[in-house]
Every structure is written in C-alpha cells, then in structure tokens.
Image 1 (cartoon, rainbow, N blue to C red):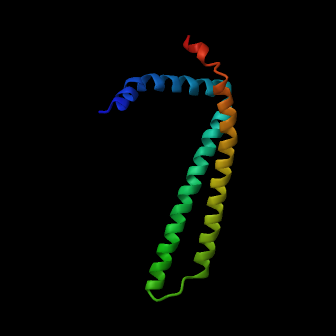
Image 2 (image 1 turned 90 degrees about the horizontal axis):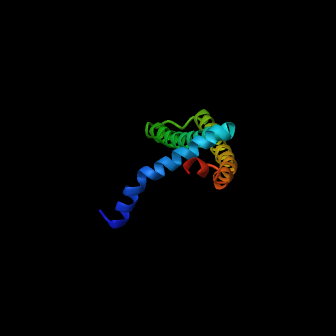
Image 3 (image 1 turned 180 degrees about the horizontal axis):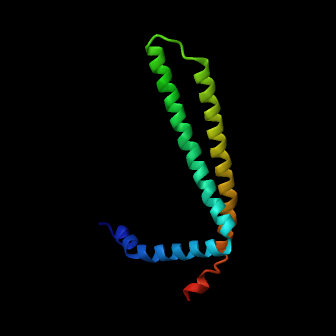
Length: 119
C-alpha cells in the first residue's frame, strides 16, 4: 500500500465520524431541506437511469422488429419519446433542485456551528 493510501485509511474513521456529525446536525436543524435534497437526488437518479433504460429498450425493440421484417410501429416511437422526455425532465428538475438545496445545506456546514459539539 502506498503512503497516501495509508494516510487515508488511518483517518477514515475520523472523517466518517465528522460526516455523521454534519449529517445529524443538518437533519436536526434543517430537516425539510435535508430530506428534499435526498428526494431530489433520488429523482435525478431515477430520471437518468430510466432514460438510459428506455433509450436502450427502444433501439433494441426497434432492431428486433425490423430484423423480423416488420416496420417499427409509430406508437412505440411515440410512447418511447414521451417516456424519454418525461424522464429527462425528471432528471433536470431533480438536478436543479438538488443544486439549489445543496448550496443552502453547504452554507449551514460552512457556518461551522457543528464544531462546538466536537469540542
């Protein structure tokens, strides 16, 4: 193991404790913003993963249908396009909301009021 890796391993429990203190403080002082941040984070993840899955499934089904000698139904393209737009919208809204809430939560962390608990 390199010297840098040993340093990180040595102080990992300490950073984990500090992270736990920060998260506990955020949950107590700003519970609504904290949980909205978590919800926005999950919405963004679901949006991007759903987009990728729908995109892959659409092209796979289109390739299979065309390989069978049939034209791709317009309803498949329409439903896939609507799903892709909805999932990308969910991703964008989740990401923007997460960013706004992150800046509010970061301000709280930068106030360093949680340091008083450690002393």
